Image (tube, rainbow, N blue to C red):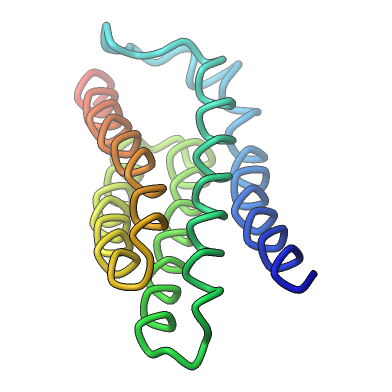
Length: 157
């Protein structure tokens, strides 16, 4: 029962980051974001919600797989601290990019976010290979999002 609650807590925390970020994103979509010049590879707006929901779910499961190895393990502590850092950077991107309406600011957040995700994958792999594997789609999506963010910056600077 305890592990089920820990799994739920891990998922809810990650999904909550997305929900709170959405509070900054939603108002800007219909106004500012729609007015930006976009690259040809910009996906339709409806794609982002389902993709992020799935990614936050996988992140939560990955964090749980590491967490269940026990706080007494130093590798677990380090891995989850770095995971927390990337989650914070993930959260900050929405208020910076959408809230401040700043593609440059978003770029200044997303690049370290990418590095923090990569570090999380490496650290998770030392504790739980399945947890690391669950983080790979997130890294791939943020790689795409970084290129998109950069293109939006260039097209709208």
